Length: 147
Image (cartoon, rainbow, N blue to C red; front, top):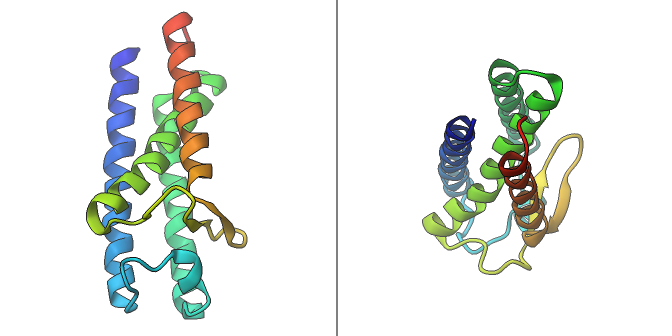
């Protein structure tokens, strides 16, 4: 059980880094400065690319749902697998961006968390906090019960 969740965490971390690299290339292609927040750049983002970015986000969620359906047993287990992997992906996405371009400069930096169905705007500490709490709660469940 623990090995499976360690591998799922590794998958989430690798997926986060891949997305971080993709976002860095996208920012460079669009001429964004590394220190510029995604929220500031959203105003300048071409509508066509906004649609493409939404499809990338949807594909990410489809990948996580598919993984949870393949790996999870019961519906509760599938949900836990999804939340666990999502939390590692979301948390390490910011870690990856920071390693690559030193963004966000602090946890109060405003970011565009998702674009579906419309932009979700919040400080970076919000997804980092939610992801951290999710990981801690699921780890506690794993250590104290049999899922």
